[in-house]
Image (cartoon, rainbow, N blue to C red; front, side, top):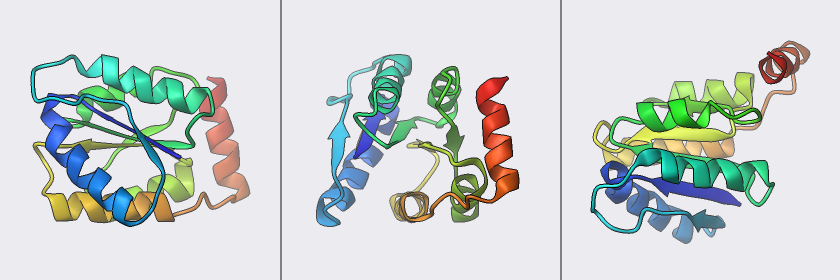
Length: 143
């Protein structure tokens, strides 16, 4: 299951992505925000982080205006590897090499179609399981 969360700056892109997830029959949990009123992105980022760390969800998608703040927030937690992606190559590489479990997007930066391609790439790309990548991910978890 995918945990999905955004602040007000990412709300419209979140809705667009959830529509795709519905159509693709990909299970997700919408953890807010639900209205366009100004909110604090750390609140919604933490909801997604908690859902992943509790194993309620396998991966997460976080969206704020730029994707920067919400990715910084998520990466404060051991076990979370959030990657801010604005292209498909980065989305693929972060799954293959970093086993990223959270995709961060900028709702005011990306167009809907590009964002959707990035989401699909992130969700469809497995971790490579290469020994060097496993070693590096393990290092990330232990620093």
